[in-house]
Structure formats: structure tokens, C-alpha cells
Image (cartoon, rainbow over all chains, first blue to last red; front, side, top):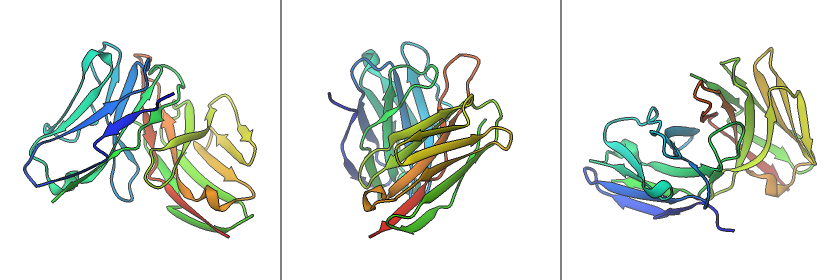
Length: 115
Length: 115
């Protein structure tokens, strides 16, 4: 079956512009996560959606970052007024549930470069 | 919150040798510890996991050990092959009162297996 897909695979933008990154989770997965992976760093948690519950936004680094999940499926991560330090690979993952020890399936990521 | 430290950051071995990657965590309430493998240009993929009520788990050439007292866990790969070359991430799950939780990842270990 189809895995987690993300688009675009690569995004180059100029400092100050807004960008939108898209994630299509595995069908039926109620939990969706966004992570940021900077060069030489681990996976930094950004935001977590679980069903219809209010998202856990505790990992968002600034108010320039926001995310939505429409209809409990597709999610969009928006970065406003991008800065060079936003350059990273943005990974999306989904799981059947956020409960217990449920495997997270990752997408291939979007590589964002801010010039 | 949880903090996960991972060592070494890079590891080079000869084909056929064993490789060991070690992680420590800070919160004794963490109860689930997955390991992910990330190949170039791809998202991380779960390779093995261990729960806090188990001390060791094996899956063919891969094993994970957990020492709850010392709050550390390790990944062991035996008879390494060139295709094992990748970045490996450990993670820890800290359960929350809500029942839901996210994973905290280490910074990753780049494993290079030379033929």
C-alpha cells in the first residue's frame, strides 16, 4: 500500500517568503507528526495531530510556524517569513494511533533551502 | 521532558565486524525505545524496538538491550554488511497523562560499513 508522501521533495525559497509543505499520511492513520531534521542533528519534534483533538504545538520554534490538518487526513506545515536557519529537511510521520507503542511511518521529507 | 543522548556520532567498521550504538535517556518514566534506520534521501524506518518490561530483544543480526536502572539502551548489529550503512536514530517515548505522547530522538549515528 501507499506510504506517507510529502511534497514538494525540494523547495528553494528566498528569505522572507512564506512556504507550505504538504503531507499525505497513510490512509486510516489518526496520528500525524511533523519533525525537523537539521544537518548533523536529530529529529526535532514540531507538532502532533491526534484525531479531532487539539494539536500538540509544543515543538514549534516560533510563531512563524503553523500547521493544519484538514479532514483528519492531509496536513500542511506553513512557515512564514522564512529565515536561513529554517533550512532543514522537514519530515512527516503518521501512525495508527498516538496511544501506546505504535510505529511511526515516515515520509521521505521535504528539503527546504532558504537563500 | 525527555532528553536522549546518542553516541557515537559516526562509526566506521569493516564488513563482518559488529557495531554498537549507545543511547541514554533522562526520564525514568519513559517506557518505549525504538530504533530507526535512515538511508540517504529517505525517511527513517523502524528496525527494532524494545519496551521497558524487557531487557533484550533480537531480530536476526540486530539486537537491542535496555538497562532501566542506568537509563541506557544499545543497538547491536552483528556481521555487518555494506547495506547496513545508514544513519541510525534511537528514541524514547515518555507517556503523558493524556495517554498520548511523542518520541524524543537522539542526534543519530552515521554507520559506514566498508567492504
